[in-house]
Amino acid sequence: MNIHTQYHTTIRTKLLVLLAWVSAILGIPSHGMACACGCNVFTVGTPWSMPIRSGFEVFFQYNFMDQQTNWNNWSSAPASMNEDLEIRTSFYTLGLQYMPSREWGIMIDAPAWDRYFNTTLDDGSLASVTHSSFGDVRVTGMYTGLSDDMSTGLQFGLKLPTGSFDQSLMDRDTQIGTGTTDLLLGGYRMGQETGWGWYAQLMWQHAFNTRDGYRPGDSFDVNGGVHFDRVLSSIGIIPMVQIAASFRGIDSGDESEPENTGYDRVYIAPGIEAMLVNGVNIFANVKIPLLTHVRGNQLVASELVGVTLSYAI
Image (cartoon, rainbow, N blue to C red; front, side, top):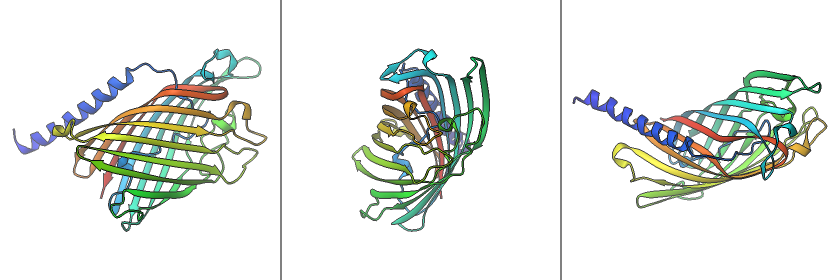
């Protein structure tokens, strides 16, 4: 086997293992992951999104979520209790991370959503719409000078009101954008042991203002995970698993529905990462709910699938 053939065979093997891992995860039964209508698909992060050196990194992320099960309090509830029937969304995010030095950096996330929304009107008839639009851009600064090895850092920034929130059929909590400018504050820490590593991260999001009668509730996301560096090291695959929790406060304002917003969720997220070529990494995971609690009636999804392709320069 020549070098060219061996090179492409190695990449193909990694992709097949990645596909098999994700397919196996999707076969696991689940109850539903809470997500208030119009929520951000906000992954707190993975160890590969945390900077370890200066330079550029660009990434493209795809997430998919299909909310079609009505949930009330701690369990599923009759669909007749919720006028909304389905919210199916594909999320596309293009991002750039730049570390001009070992202590300071910036990350920009520019999302676009493609959302299908099916609901019941006041007269009992059904109506649906597919709406595609740019979402709310996030600009996050990073300070990594708390430790010599950049293993501990602070994150701070803004979510900007760049997303659309004027689709006539959708309520404000179902729109792609919130219309508000939000504060982002968080931090992370990671460590490396022999053959494995760990990390923990948290992020708080708080809207500064009310926009056209709507203000989203605060959100707090925290997660921790471990990655197993030697399990599939012969083919360059790194399995990992995360445990994460998200807490979303109640929306407010004349155009909000405080009785049907706000949630608490805990989920497990098995995943896998592989280096395809020098500097190019692919990461995929599936979030599976362990605990779901919502206020009022909200549509939930059985899982959230995500894939990220990144390139470090």
